[in-house]
Image 1: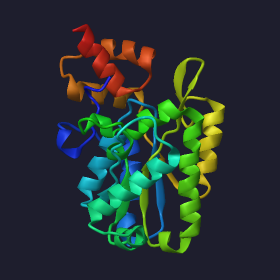
Image 2: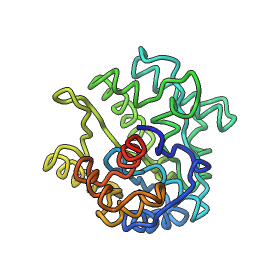
Image 3: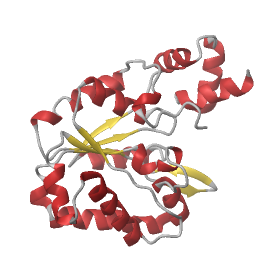
Length: 250
């Protein structure tokens, strides 16, 4: 279901302002005037987290550095993936030492971990994406996050000068289906989000039925309201899934 997934700003042909977007915009407006903020942007698959992030950053003309991660294969240890991430940042910034990374990242309004990190396989050829690697590794991928936490704690004084935007999802297989810790597990997801809000800024991308209908019609102008409502009952308020389903049935 990738046809209506936006991985880059230049792919965006239409955009509908929603309550979630207004909340995201309000949060992003603070970034040029503050340091040390960590913003988690979350939402169910198919809600358009990427397009909201890219549109808000563009509207506010934020100086964003987006981290890229292009993995050569699935069979990599968490330590190797961590090292490849640092290597990619060094190459982007034109520096030789990992010790210089944080100093250079301070120059940006925010550092973004989004599709060029999670879904690089949809952007670059002959590349394995982090999301594919996570799916392959399962709960063993937790070791990568633990390494990131340890690095953050080790250099926490330096991170106080850096804002980060994290497109946040933690997906795993449960009962043969992919589930996201923060959106698909009912009360448990609500608890996980509430705990995340304690130390961090959290913006959840979600839509009302009316907003979903408007978004779908912005992509498929001939789609009927009743047809869209039928697919909302099937998929929920997830415009990308609905657009792909309608396009398939045409």
